[in-house]
Image 1 (cartoon, rainbow, N blue to C red):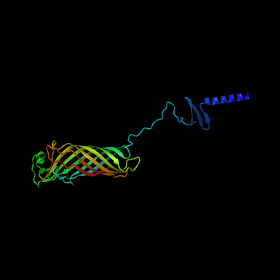
Image 2 (image 1 turned 120 degrees about the horizontal axis):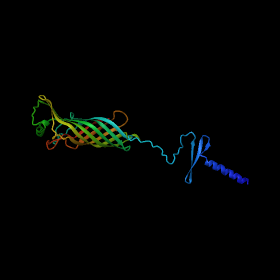
Image 3 (image 1 turned 135 degrees about the horizontal axis):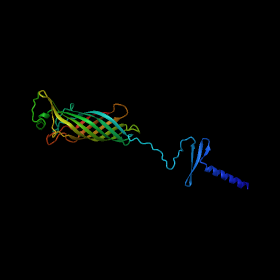
Image 4 (image 1 turned 90 degrees about the horizontal axis):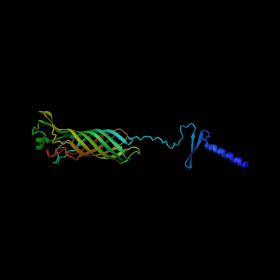
Length: 271
């Protein structure tokens, strides 16, 4: 009889413990929760704001991702020298005085440690210094309206254009320096499209000083080029890259002028 009473008392005490919301052990409270056929035990301090496990309808907040974490923006400026080509298809230009100036911005999207996609928006200025374009029959007739100049009167003859350009390129890092950032030796391969908002031939003479000759039909407003850039990207200031640009479209309309401008430019850019 005493054994039955003892077993009954133990059963009642156990039922009371299970019915309680929690059992205190020091500063902690033990909670027993039932989900279907399984029991879950949660232990947390009494002064904690909430249990570590959320309820069935509660979801933990997800920290927002920074969509700009894998992008890099920078500005750049560069100077290039137009390589002269004295072939029959091009007007003779002076290499040291024929230059290109670029000023713009660049944005990179880092897809991996070794690969990025990028774009550029820039202003480009081209200055081609001629040697004897005014003496070429078609150029003189179409652009200069058959004007003649003596050798003593003519001081300078150049073709200039002010361009707005947009480019797209892929960047391959040959030796990335960091797991989190794309740094190191890289090669860019891309294309660029130019719109020459202002394009003209300028002559400087003793009699007329400086005079501009514009020809919308003979001077093409749009051009396309292939670009290559090799550089070393790092955190230190003074980053630079060597670039080459080859124009694969004509600067002059072949129906009006038989020859074109040299297509190759080589220079350096600073970021």
